[in-house]
Image (cartoon, rainbow, N blue to C red; front, side, top):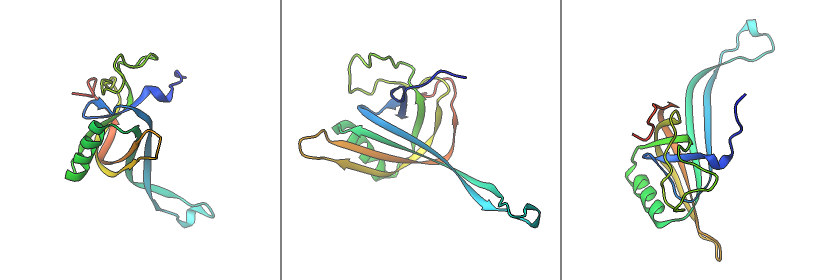
Length: 150
């Protein structure tokens, strides 16, 4: 058994840096399957994995820096280096300078390349503006080297 990890300890990193003012991240791993039912299976179905996919979504408070960086990457169709996992410099006291992208990934975080497939902004009257981004994996996703942000 390992230690319990709180959600605020897990970060999404793009190009080795966290996105400032993140409120939530979701990593979804899926498997495509194909039916391989035979007479030997009787009433029971059977499947085999034919492909693996991954996607990360991130909810953030809107900052002009993050919004413009993500928009430029989406507009250009840029493949981004992404990582998901623990921050090497996270503390329960947060950053000395909140709102910066000064968190860096810890050794062994999950990494891959992804493209932005959805970028949306929400600006409700009287509330903090937010942005949401969806990153779809391009190729493999797995454990990184000791220096994930290099």
